[in-house]
Image (cartoon, rainbow, N blue to C red; front, side, top):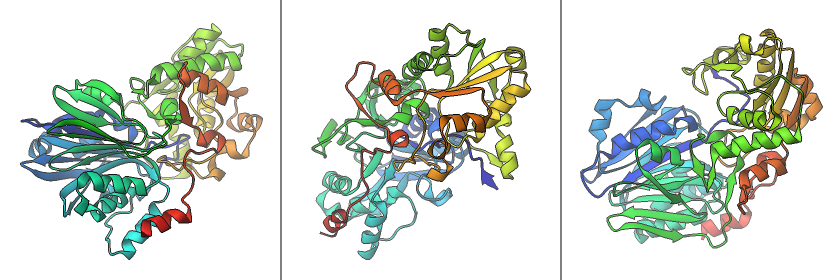
Length: 470
């Protein structure tokens, strides 16, 4: 049985952590925080809580409400906790790779939950294994955990700083000890991480929507190359990287993040709507109705309709009880299975010239199926518009990306993709257009590697290995 090969990049992961000095059910708050981050990963979920000065863990395969119930949450309880929802990027999809990871070292118990990907993880793992370290999983997070253990005699803060300075890549990390909650964001801020407050309790999590979900107050985003520490003395900050530049993954705004989140000062819903507005100016078309592909295409569709003057409508209905990944027994059924998730509203599209807005095209198979569904529902013409640029390159920073050979934009022209998916016309927003929508007057950078092949972090050099050996 295989997972559905969707025409989307797969999400990375979501992390949530909360620290309290007093009596508090941290596991319960973390449960609801993870529930708000469920869109970032549906394969596994886990929580580690600090209860009676000991770290206790529960995790398993499935959605948050599959893994946890009231009895389990009450057993975890705890004054502080971290949690994780996962979609596998490195390491296979199985229970042993579920996070958070919990281990015992000279420092005592320590747990880690990680969103992102390390480009030099294999080199570090090999060196650590040569030095006698043992690994129980195949994921990057355990590499960081073992690096922290290696520097345990220096104390937790110095051990974390040394470990983070040895790794390269994209990461939003939460770490829990019995005395502190630690958050870390990579020097390019490719993966998101923000800070919130619930009464006097500090929260570190992947998206601001999780802070809202538990009734907290958003404080700020973690800065590029920053370590934040919440303990009995309050909140402290350490900058571990000298030359930092905020280059948030553009796909956070295009697809991954929830529309009610704000990342690095940019509201996700607003950015998607403006992308639709710019797309309407860059690729106008005569049509009768504008519809969006639920859910992340809806905001852009509203923006396109607003600028074009073409009426906006609901033309595709989503089955809310099917997750972003599900099981199908064959390639043929996997390609057809999109109709289990989405179906055309015939009364809206029949006899109409339809503008169909989606956030991206990766493999093209789902786009092809959507065009077919709409045509079978009686749509006269289908003009496909994409609110992100052509995806031409794989991602190395925490997204489960198709190989370049599987990316339709890497091997076909726009006209060839149009013919492949069966649309009457096809247009993408330009990179400059997307940047105008995202920047909104802000001087800020973005990781655009999947669009233009230019990545903020290069592959590891031999000197990295030499430095680690020292």
